[in-house]
Image (cartoon, rainbow, N blue to C red; front, side):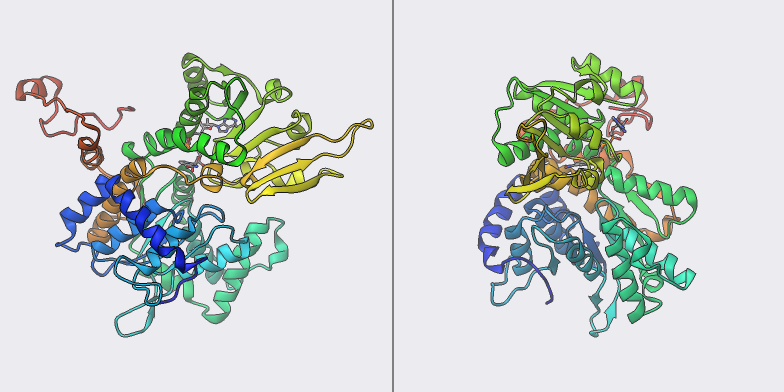
Length: 485
Ligand code: NAI
C-alpha cells in the first residue's frame, strides 16, 4: 500500500481517539449498521480531499465498511492530525509493520508544493488485475481535487498547460506544475479521469460556490451533490462547530484572555454566527461587519454592534474573517491595528486576509512564536519599537490549523450527509444529469433523527389529524423546500 504520513508509530494513539470518536458519531455508526451487509459502495473508488482529522478517519472507515476503495489527501496544509492519518493507514486490523488500512497522503505542515503533489495521488487507484485506474467518485472539501480534474481537462482540450510564470499566485503555480507534469506523462490523463467519475460530493460553502459557478458557465463535467446545504450540515457544522472550535483555536494559539476584549467577526453567515457566539460566550465584546443587509440586521438584533472594519480597526483586539470572500483584511487595516492585535481566518481559503500584502510592508519582519503562530513586527516608528500583530495559521483556517477543528458529534451530522450523498450518486448515477443537487429533505431529517437519542431528545409525534391540518405526512418531511430554519 502506498501512503505518505508524518509518523506511522502514532497509529496506536490515533486508533484510541478514533474509537472515542466513534461513540460520538452516531450517524456514521448507524450508516455502518444499516448498510454494512448491503455494501452499497462496493466498486466505488473514492478519491477524497478533506481535512485529515480523527473525525474524517471515522468517515473514511465508514466508506470502507460500506464497500468502497478509498484514497485520501487533506484539503489544507495545516489541518492534518498526524495520529489520525497514521491510524487510518494502519487500519483497525493492521500493524505499523503491516499497514492494512487506507492510503492517506497528508501531514501537518505540508508545503504548497507537497500539498498539490499529494492531492494528485488520490487519483491513482489500482484495479483487481493490478491496472492503474482513476476514481469513480470524488469527495471534496473546498473543491481542490475537483479543480485539478477540470483544469486538467481544460488544458488537454486546449493542447497546452500555461507556464508557471503566467501567474503571481503561489498556489496556482503549484497547480500548473502538477498538471504540466501529469500531462507530460499522459496527455489524456484528466479526460480519462473525468470520464470515469460518476460525481462529486462537496463539503463546504466555498467548494459549493465553485461548483455552481462551473455549472452556470457550462463547464461542470459531472453531477455534484452540495452536502454543505443540507440543513444538518451548514446550520450545524458551520454554526455550532465554529462556536466550539473558534475559541479553541485562539486559546491554543495564544492563551489570551478573551473576556472584555473587543473582537471583530467579518461576515455573519452560518460560520460568522457560530464564531460570534463563541467569542461572546467568553465575555468578549463582539462587533460584526457585513455587506448583506439581512445578515447585518440579524447581527444587530442578536445584540451585536455592526460596524465597518475601518471604524473599529484601531481599537479592536481580535479580528476573525468568516466570509468565504477575499481581501477582507488588507494592508491598510494591518497598518492601523494596535500592538498585539490577533488576526485569524476561519473561512476556507487564506485569501480572506491579504497575507502577501502584509509580507510586502517595507521593513516588516515575520517571527515564529510556534508553528502556526507568528508575530509580524512592524518597523520602528518615530524612534519607538514597531508594533506586533499576531497572525494565526498564516491566514488559513485557524480552528483546524491551531486546534483540532470541530468535535465529532457535529461532524457526524456533516459526514452522515456525505455518506448518503456518496451512496446516492454512486448507486443512482443514471438518475443524475450534470448539475448541482442537494439531498432530499427526508434524508436531511433522517440525519438529524440519528443524532437525537444521544442527546436525550424526546421528539413529539404528530397525530394523523395534526399532520393533515398542516399538510404534511406523519413521517415527514415536515417543512416545505423554501423553509429556512
Ligand atoms: P455564508 O455565505 O453563510 O456567510 C458568509 C457571510 O459573509 C455572508 O453573510 C456574506 O454576506 C458575508 N460577506 C461576504 N463578503 C463580505 C465582506 N466583504 N465583508 C463582510 N461580510 C462579507 O458562508 P458560511 O457557510 O458561513 O461559510 C463561510 C466560509 O467558511 C466559507 O469559506 C466556508 O467554506 C468556510 N467554512 C469553514 C469552516 C471551518 O471549520 N473553518 C466550516 C464551514 C465553513
